[in-house]
Length: 489
Ligand code: G3H
Image (cartoon, rainbow, N blue to C red; front, top):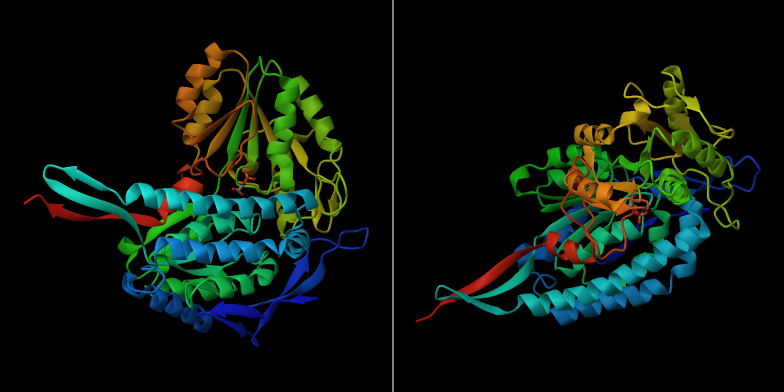
């Protein structure tokens, strides 16, 4: 059993002896894949939350603390020390990723390596940013030396599906820009932080990074209520983001950096290369069992090709292999959220009640913590799966006659992260791109939606995001431009 009983506040690794919550492993040695207890995590509350935010606030000290005033080169030394130490934990963190969230071995390795690379690239970009911004400019007789400064205390909450990579895409830029942080990992994803606690402690001055665990409403709400948080940086759902925002006594002062829900569509035009479209739609909708905010969550297929598309797509889905994360050539793994299979089943039942069919043979097959992906057709707007972000293994398909149909749906949608467009004729595609970029923030041509490479901006319109992440943009999101001005005399 893995019992996470250590947290980090004010540079000290503290032992927790209060209430704990059981963590279920997503994987099991039994044939049935029944969840088994993996360990326990602390259930922290107001006391620990306030202790952590107080430490971060004191370390920031209204911008006068050691960290926000530290020379760029020294801050880089701390970050480099951290990433060097982190690299030594690869094997154990990869193992935790598999046990705790059910990510396959290659994807877990990729998540770790991508995170390390992200940190090194951020350090390089930060050097560049500092070189570029610390320059004199002159306008209308005023000389200015512009630079980027930190914002204050950041409360950082990461998601369970990328507990390392996506969480660190908030944490690392926040830290390197001179902010201080309180970090609360998602419930599935606490254990894998434990091998990194020493690295955090050894690399940053006391109070710069504080790590607590628990339920948002118990540990994060009091942190917000304290009024000491300047930036709420959260990747997750809008309900939690709004609930936390509402706790802040002075919302006007609060900055938000949020990665929220998405319902990314694929649009398959009549002249699309179907082999390519099917292959990309499979990985786009079902890699990591569809538990990605960038997953394709609804497929629009032109009526001329929908029959052929459905037949081949359904057969390919049925050929996907389910197993434990370390098994070779596995593409489907057990689901870490206990309630997920029942929720996916509800979506399937609702769609069937309203006229859809499960078009693949294995669709909906159950075990206690797994449900085989169901491909649903035809979908209409009455169905829950048309509106809800399923974040799991169910793929709804709609056919269309006129391209305006998916465009209208996208315009009406509450979300606006990305779209995938499959087609060959550039004369059709070019004007469509001009429309699509005004509906979402990234148009993927003949390829599935994704966040990376991490150098590109990652954001969304409407309810999908606030602020922009990426190696480059996040440094700007977590800082403010300031300048020193002097007049020509
Ligand atoms: O859950 C949302 C992630 O940002 C997805 O990232 O496209 O690299 O899998 P990814």
